[in-house]
Length: 216
Ligand SMILES: O=C(O)c1ccccc1NCC(=O)[C@H](O)[C@H](O)COP(=O)(O)O
Image 1 (cartoon, rainbow, N blue to C red):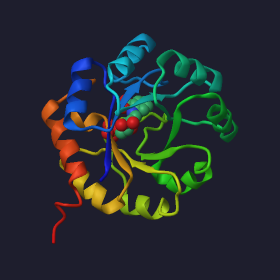
Image 2: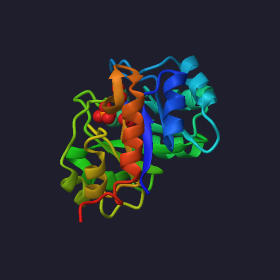
Image 3: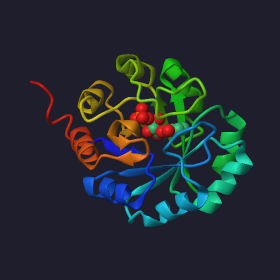
């Protein structure tokens, strides 16, 4: 069954909605070099991580200025996993793997998904997204899922599919790409930074049941 990450949580009500809906992972955005209504301060990120129940993975989504800042954020927020967006050097990933007590996830551009192989041994999961020109996520834009499926077919790391997913298209995306997990931020919002509970429930349900509801 496909796992689901609900990303860009800014408050406890939305976090509880995501958990009750059956989300496997909760994304909290902090210290990103782009303007987004989903970013929270370090203290808030720590509070949200602390509010998550057992058996649900907390993911810090960040674009740190360098590896030392990433280590600082990991120490202060204590997430289960860290997801990096923007450019990051291979050497920094190896250094972080040795120095951070969290799983490492890396966002790669769907237009360059073949490059995901370069990072395959260095991270615990690869997220194929449709980023903005500045490297940030949350664009609400889909990409060519057939191309992503082909480009990532030989990856060892779990593949997380992101970019423009919504309750309406997630089942189709899951059936096309067959990812380990899907990730959504703007596609389940009522307004910037606030989730729509009905959309969150529908997204989780349709992502997890996509294979069962396939057309004959
Ligand atoms: O969501 C943001 O605003 C964001 C900003 C900067 C870096 C990462 C960001 N989001 C990361 C995610 O994991 C999103 O879920 C992913 O990019 C998909 O977003 P969307 O297309 O809105 O579902």
